Figure 1 (cartoon, rainbow, N blue to C red):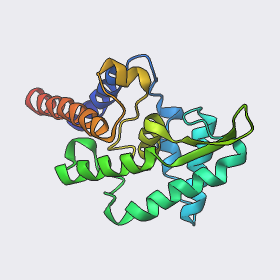
Figure 2 (cartoon, helix red, strand yellow):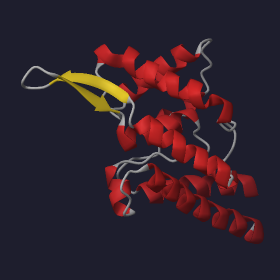
Figure 3 (cartoon, one colour):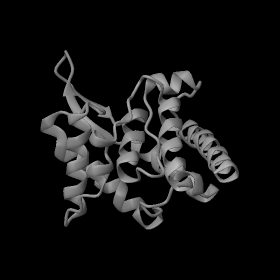
Length: 187
């Protein structure tokens, strides 16, 4: 009973943190998506790239899904030995794991999401950015990551840097731990 109440309160905290900028809908969330187990990492990253495009999370041109998938796959391959378990919850992340998230977020946000032609016909590189990075990490680790966007960052006075991502996760973690303690005390 305490665990069920804790999970419900976790969703409520996430909803409060996100305000009206993004509704947390379990039926259409990444939770059903993340448990698909493609045979190859590249297939999974292509699926994430496609999901990002379909949800208008990152402006990934359909012509550049392979490029974005390669970028996400490269990040995953570089960081996978240090990635914590997909079952690990935000409230139980260690400081070392939060430092890892900060590093991975900082790397991911500067990777290429897409390319586009400018008015003067030059090619311009579009970065994944802080919103896309947070939501991609959420797709990879939905139990420990909290997606965010510009209204959420503005509401919390955050600048979108890797350090602000870590700070935001710590803020959410503190609220979750407080809720967990209250659930255990008042069961």
